[in-house]
Length: 182
Figure 1 (cartoon, rainbow, N blue to C red):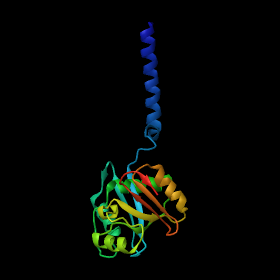
Figure 2 (figure 1 turned 30 degrees about the vertical axis):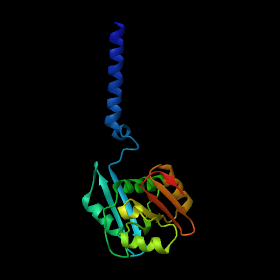
Figure 3 (figure 1 turned 135 degrees about the vertical axis):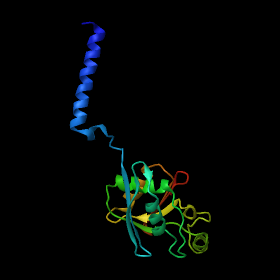
Figure 4 (figure 1 turned 90 degrees about the horizontal axis):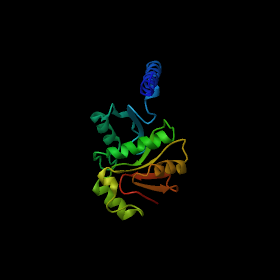
């Protein structure tokens, strides 16, 4: 047997071994980060509505689920709905997964209409005149049974968009704008 034949024979035997393992335990071939479904749960503190929905499955966003999310994250003052940024939803899913929580995010503020945002900007400190809430790219949340500081830390660790920490108001702001923290 030549050296080349020995290598080919070894490679063949390794391939056979890997194939046998894969047949017996198919999950070992799947990456731990590979996901087939993304699910989120929300509780709107202003309307009392709850939603648990799978918004992404088998490589695609689910339009009906996105519509349901847009509804629960609507401007509760005007009833106006807007399309929420899918990157924001992915960020929320990543944060909740990192925290290993099954709890519903409590919504302090999701989408804001320009009218609501102008009113809040004029009457409340810290509300941006051109808030990303008006583009469906921001949300103010808390997560029951999770320390607010841990929620902030998990959001910051994703290194996506802005993360604002408001312990006195008991919420964390996350958005998909430029990366920044306050």
